[in-house]
Image 1 (tube, one colour):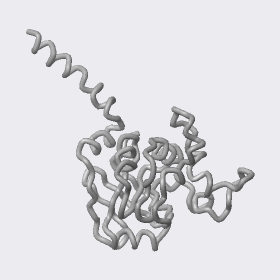
Image 2 (image 1 turned 30 degrees about the vertical axis):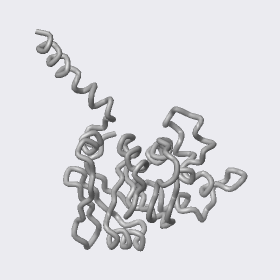
Image 3 (image 1 turned 135 degrees about the vertical axis):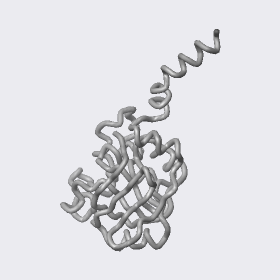
Image 4 (image 1 turned 180 degrees about the vertical axis):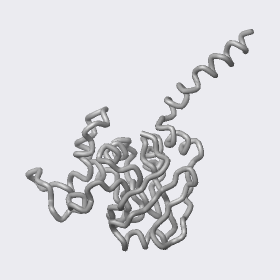
Length: 191
């Protein structure tokens, strides 16, 4: 899926240090498929022991439905390295995660798997946490986040990762898209 602009309401999970085992518990790591992992997203928080949705959990509330941007407390994605965490977020329907601190390995795994990790300043982060459900706009080309009544704020992103997200490809897909140019180069080199 390509990402250029995201306009969405936000879902807020203000907890700090949301680790990858909370995002997708280890018992769901037996699959190599991304499909269906959205059902396991925050499974220990979303469901009770009998597998029934907990009505008080934010993702189970009606206002969370259709939101494509998750605003999380400080240090989301800490803990073990597992690509299943961004897989679960993307399969659930999220396109971006916003925080003032995102764990490095989780951030890199997200960029490689179609999830945009956005790190914002503390003031913007605090405002987003205090205003759940607000409509925001992410412009990946300009690397900006716009919230109502406030100036747009920039966010850092690796230029190559931005190109991949905007074209809906991973690193291998990018290389494969250059196959014709690679073959031409190799032909010239052999000559």
